[in-house]
Image (cartoon, rainbow, N blue to C red; front, side, top):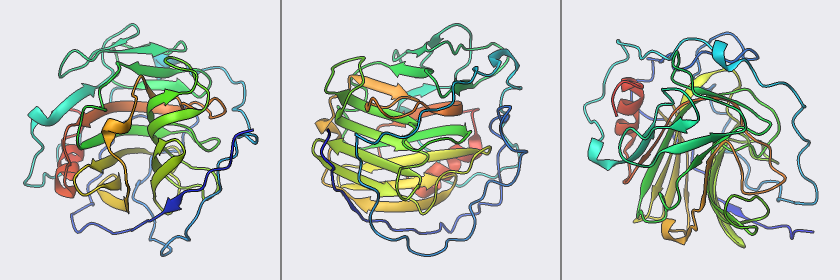
Amino acid sequence: MLQIRRLAWVVTLELLGCDAAAHIRLLEPAETAAPWMDASPPASPGEPEAGIELRDAASPPEPMPNQEPPNRRDSGPPPVADADAGSPPISPSEDALVLRYDFSGDGDVVRDLIGDQDARLFGGTMLSPDRTFISLDGIDDYVDIPNGVVSGLRSATFVAWLTWNGGVCWQRIFDFGISDQGEDQVGDSVTSLFMTPKACGRETFTAMAEVAPAQYAVAADEALPTGYALQVALVVDGESQTFTLYRDTEKVAEAAMAFQLEQLTDANNWLGRSQWAQDAFFTGAIGEFRIYSRVLSAQEIAQVRAEGFETP
């Protein structure tokens, strides 16, 4: 039985001053998604209580229902950026992009639009020429990114556009690291940097670094909503040693962490899959995924969102 590990949470919730009135229709919702609505989060109920349910590997979350994957050839048109979304004055440099996937094309090879870090699709999900997103069924679908894309960075910003269809906790938007079973295998996490739409216990949108046995986490005050297209971002600042978590243009949490990206053994770099054997796969759609090799400011993240999928 795995030992129960304790972690300390420091969460700071702060609303940005930028104009968040513009919303971009990024993805068509999957068949189970709710009708399109304004994805702006509700007013904060206040400072969340400290602490989270400690991970107990002996009591894994209930498995996802054994459902058929959605019809990936009928998942709706590609997302379209809102031409009137506004544009903050600062724009991230293309030179800072480490990789960029927009999930265009066909087959099972996800082309890197920046360099040579092409990824592979597993579990049966495929690219389609008539859209620029992938549907992940929550059963066995995931994206395998090449090794070593994160551990050589001092700081980084991870950005994804997605629609989450809900389900059990500890699903992964992304997970970079390795398990005790080695490359391409799940087991118990040894090193990991991940983002989940809902952590167990407090059920909050969370990002966490694990360098066994230590854990460093940053958490919002609630889980991601289901059935809504939105942008999420994690900023890892190696200089100030902080995590900052964004949902669309809002900074939802910030936390100190004694962690550096070079501590990762990033041989299992996955979208939609966890290093932990008991964690469920992601169920929903991912429209784009990017890694920047530096800290992006709140204004820059807002600019990335305003530009949508059209430019890096």
